[in-house]
Image 1 (cartoon, rainbow, N blue to C red):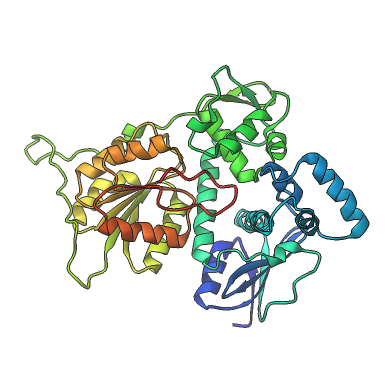
Image 2: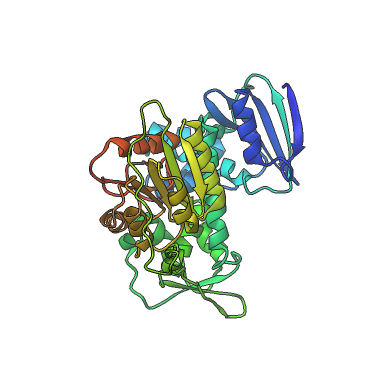
Length: 425
């Protein structure tokens, strides 16, 4: 291939990654949007950031403060020493015994991942790809030492989740200049399904005087995670989101019952017929089939690509099409339902699915609370998986579901350092 140039408005960053991965090519990918530029090396071991013009993630010091590895006072002292010696901050904190090598690696990986995920939001950008070996790592850019997931499919899956969820979040949080105000509802961080430390960090910065962007900055968490936490706080009634004119943004809670497929009636207008239950097994040598349901389009498509890549036959559609698909494809071997950002309080749809198929049902959710997982299992789900997850952990979950006789909670581990807490196993 040698060289490739184009515009991400025509050939998206996700399509470009998939194209390069399919060719098993190694080389330098440069993405430019206005004054901003990022250079990535793609190789068999994964992706590495070689350089960025403007860093958009939390600094290493801020991440170490957030994770309680060092204090603000210690960071100030280390920064003074860094100015005198010219050494990397990671080297200084490790030498003084404040943190371990693993702590530094996790913080750097968070920074590298967030910078790469940010590229999926670039719409007016140019790219240039030059095939070739990895260049020498810049000595003054520690992120170049970090290898991001070797599977482009896993990266695209997480990026698709963020794009879809941000679309939903923007219906409540139109822009980040809006001002969050606490309500009188008692704040209980460990009951909301996200990392309690993340929720507490965001909630504690809400004063009613500063906008959402400033709250996010002060929380020291990655922008997407903090914005998602703000959305949860708003939809659960702990926070009101006000625009600059003082008007309150009202969150319209989705009616989960509206997603239930309408029951079909008999030809003579009698009682509705039940969908025929799908068989659990298929003949030996035939690829297993999976029905993938979800209203988050980009995420559903990315997950379908992951499953097909692993050798499964995949049918994917919006949840409202479940009855038609189950009727037309009675030999489906498993059903995966992505509940998106829906409230975990009600699982009528999970119950309906389990009543209408003998195939095991797997629920994907961003809610990491044990209560949500138990609610899904009590409605009949065979497994409950918390997003985000890795490609390998999802495939292990699906394989386990086909052989398990009892429900599984939270089988897929999350990998990004700032991701929601995993549910109890």
